[in-house]
Length: 192
Image 1: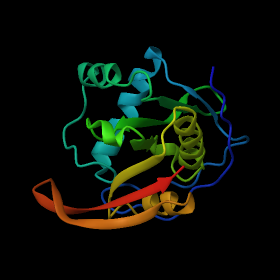
Image 2: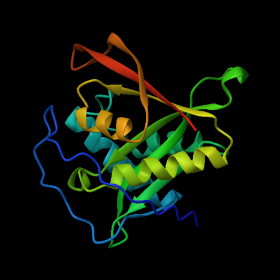
Image 3: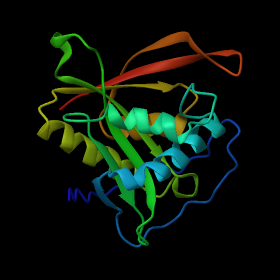
């Protein structure tokens, strides 16, 4: 089991969008981070679907089915790790993944990342612990750099990335549509 227990606290600002405010949840200990297993897929799907519903972290509009998540899981082998963070009761509180950035061999040292935290656990440091753990795993897997693309309206997520040393590369204006509205997307990177 991969135990990359790290410490940190995510920004505790309010969430924009349709998100209902949830007070910060204090965890007695830093969450346990481990490699995801097939038994975690339903929790990963639930948390991702919360992100879709809240319209804060993805341009996806339609909830993912178990089949969608199974197909996604099948593409996360070898270097493309998926980690989960467990709360004190052993429930999955969030997940993070390394994703292919490009099929071109010149970019073999670059990974894209995804991080999603359960709605009730946002602001409790889960994202920070997952990001630190994912960076360590990426370095172990011989990645040189991590890139990400985030909605500019995702203030909490962008603050988390900046806190961990990601730099803004630029903003893609009206890069994708969400509910019929073109959204700006920020590109960020970090050398490992």
